[in-house]
Image (cartoon, rainbow over all chains, first blue to last red; front, side):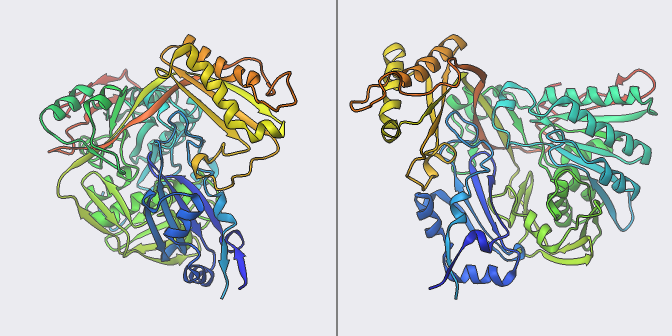
Length: 107
Length: 470
């Protein structure tokens, strides 16, 4: 099956704090067709994201398809609040990188 | 105040963190808005500023934006509302902004105006009393309810105000309002609701304007946008000639920094955006209809609190030997044990951030193969500076002496760019992210009003809030 990297399909892939205890991820598509196709592919689900980051699904507080924004969005609980000693990313802004290489099957 | 529409100029989100762009702001002012609003706070910046009662934003940038907004608002004769003063919205940050406004008014010889402000700090005593009285201080985002122990470990708490202190100060005749910690949307939703517009559209307007041009495209921060509310809809327009508010950019902004794009909470209820409809109204304007406001069954104020963990020093080391890289955990283990031999196992914190392995992502890093070189940042945290320095120094220097059985390089196990450890800001922790029940939405917020301009300022009127501190 032909696949494409998510980085070649999405316009925006980003992560950022959502409050002090969570990091939220936005995958935004410029084209509604590409958005729909990516959704239908099943490549980006709660389970696949949990697998990618090596975390239990219970660490994902929200996982939604946001049609008005052509976006898939999910949010993780942090293991410690942002900016605590030992937190490597106060803003949560560099946690999205593994998503870029995710393979999305093209139908 | 009345009429069919109200227009809000939003020149900046998190005022002070970076300066507003004067070009698009001037275009916004020329469009003669009814209010100029900007939030100045964020919990994004970590717990340090709230805990240590400092700013993360430079004073010069804060003054820059306050000056632009104040001069424009006084020239137009429209109210200016600033939320969450000075990054954290603590009392000292409110006082600092109030002082800046006075200085600016004097320097520019502005005609007299009324300056309203309110405080958002909540004393530990008050929270302790509520817990003792059996009140639940409920944890947000999976946190357990607040314990007295966690409260005692907290240095400063602010409560997140809703629209209520802003509207009361407007009722009292304020021309300029400097707010303590408050919801981003309150500075916009407040005046709109006060003027009789529907709550749902008013809160939505506040939500979409909270970060100014973040709701426009192409990406370009700190540019002005104007939001207009009518009884039927909200319209948001980019002021920068090359930016547009599109369906995608406006809908997309609902996602930004929120765990869920469909809900936004504020004191008194929740904005539900499931039913929002977005239409391209003109080239640079998007029209929004359909949000719903669900009033909360009880009033619960969000509390934010930060507590000091300790003084902090930082050390840096690099590694190039592939055998040492493959055994990096043993190297760190050696240094940890050396610290333990001196200080025992508790009473301090020692953290190793290993760049080239998982320095950015920690436990979320899926790549398990380390790079050809590693950079290690060592953090020593202890009750006093001397101990923090020594914890960090042992924890850093002993990386050099780690004994690996088959290492070839026996003259030193790591590279030091600096043979010293560096003092850093004290370490803090978000201790409070909870909600407290109140019977009155103004209960925790002390209101003040002063006259500013030409003649010497004088305080008029006592605090209105019942439990705030003046």
